[in-house]
Structure formats: structure tokens, C-alpha cells
Image (cartoon, rainbow, N blue to C red; front, side):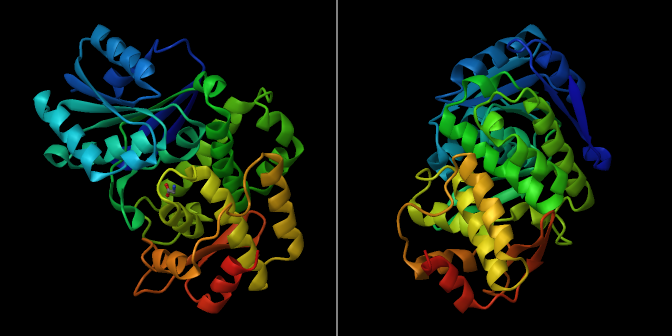
Length: 362
Ligand code: GLY
């Protein structure tokens, strides 16, 4: 079993990574991460309910009185209605500050249950049990929680670090293919933004990784968690611009997700398209050559990820969403763009005409 420590002073925590049978060890992990816990609300969705029930049983066996809440699977659940249902479940459980919220699922469950934990009673401890690749390598780590506004992805949220993250790699074997491939987009992202050697490794083993035949998948997950932890440790609340590098491709991606209707594209699929747009934009700005765009595109395509939207969205609509993105300031769009493989920077002076050209030149 691997452990990645996220060092954030009093908010430090462990990411435990292993391939275990079901939930053995999880109860002890929760007890160690949240020693004062007496009750737990386990949150799952219609796809993870069985696993979430097992988590509930494991916590019960470790002396925690627990409740269970299930929301419909899919991005549309990151909304105020489902959030209110979690608040009701916490109320019904008579939750207090000794109640831990345990999120069992992909990025949607982590963000939604995490935001409920961040806000109920002004903050409850949170344990992440990510079951999708995307949640394992990105969204369960770093403390971003939130829900979508109908006109903008993740516009309502809070930083709330988990007390622990429990990754069971066994989930990867049963993940639907589209979900698994979607998570690979965030894996590629780490190579592009931070780690050339990791990008090289992904290129060399793309087909094996895509087909889940790469026996170092656990190492890939652990490596992504370590890379993310290093960034979060330096800029927990995204105030210096350093953490913003993790948003590579996300300004475009969030616009596609919002304009397409939440859940039409999986988040990772939108990120793959967004990273391609960001690379094309960086090339148009003369930051990188055409070879960079081609190399990144080839890897994404080998992982069967989309690199262009399947439908055309009105440019004005996409631009309007980008101007309200969380990174935007004073109506000015900001983009994380590559300057070479392994390095990206945040730019706030990209001419709108160039962005429009990237969106329209397909
Ligand atoms: N997913 C980007 C971040 O956690 O900062």
C-alpha cells in the first residue's frame, strides 16, 4: 500500500492507495483520520450505492453510527436540489461536529458531498473514497468542493480539505470504459503541465494504459496524487497562480460542459478538448510549435479521448461562460497555456479575437 501525505499544517492528511478487497481497513483509516468521529453520513450515487453500503457497514463495525444518502449519478446532481437533500440527511442523522461525511464515488459525489461537509454546521470532517480514475488522480485531492450554477460550472463552492482519502484501485477494473478514459485526460494533464518524463512514459505505454493492461496503474495514480499534493501544498487556496496550473484546459472545458448541458460531456472528455484548444491557442501565441500540439493530440487520441467538440456551440455563448470563469477577473479571460512540455503559465492578456479564432477554426 502507498501513502501520499498532503502537508498542510493542521489540515494535513494521508491519501492511502492500494488494491484491497472491498473495505477492509477503511474503518480503521477513518477512525485514525477523524479520532473524534461518532457518526457518519455515507454519500453515494446510483452507480456506487452498493459500494457505499459496504462502506457504511464497515464504519458500523468500527463503532460509528451511520446514515446513508444516495443521489442520481451524473453531473446534473451537482446542484442545489441534491445539496439540500444532503443537508436534510445530515439533519435527520442529528449531525454535529463529530459527524464525518464520507463521499463514495466519482468527482460529482466528491464535490457535492464535500461542499455539504464544508458548509453544514460551518464545517464537518470529510473522507473521500474516490471510485473513478478522475476522482482518484484529481478531484478527491486538494480540497476543492462545490456545485454548478446553471450558467457556470463549479461557480458555487468552498475549499475544504478532506481528513483523508482512501483509494481502492480495485474500482478501476469495473469502471465503464468511457469513465476510465475520461480520467486519463487528467493523467495526461499532469505530464503536460509538470512532468516531461511522465508524459514520455504515457506516450510509450499509451495502449497498455488505455486497455488497463499496464500493471503500474497504481504507480500512475500515486504519482499524480504526489504531483497534485506538491502543488496544493504550495498554493492551497489558489492565490499565487501556482495552483492555477492544474486548470490547464479547464477554461475551454468548463465552457463546453456548461453550453452542452451538464453531463453531456464527461469532465475528462471536456478537459481533453480544452487542452487541445489551449495547445492550439499557445501555438497561435507562438509559445509552442506545431509539434507540441501534434504530440499532445496524438497521445490523447491514442487514449481514445476527443480533441474537438462533437457539436458546434455558438462562439458568443462559449466566450460568455469563459468571462465568468472563476479565474476571470474584471470580465477578462485567463488561460493556462503551455510554454514548453512540462511547463504552463497563467495568461490574462490573450486577445479575444484569437480565442474566437481557435473556437471557430475546426
Ligand atoms: N482540479 C484543479 C484543482 O484541484 O486545483
